[in-house]
Length: 135
Image (cartoon, rainbow, N blue to C red):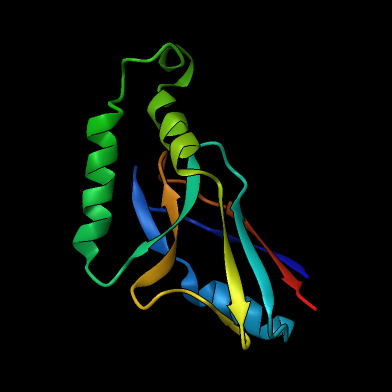
């Protein structure tokens, strides 16, 4: 089963918890055991699994990325000024795969799926969810 949805972002960089949306797609699929792939179809966005209980973790991650990969110093910046967003996205990755157990995402207690906006604000950021049942 595959389903797509879009989200809009409001900041240059932000993390958006999409766990609830992915869980509702999984519930609709009625698949009890298998895998769930979540993919961001963009070169300046990423999908990660991280803690979302303390919002400071999200801010710390974005701050760390900005310190490691500063903006305005890359060759691609001459084209559209967002090379740092592309580099951050490539390091974090466009997708995550989560096991499905008993009809639920088998995430750890503090884990959440997050969409990483790295070049916002943007509208219509496409996320593709693919759910495959195991035997």
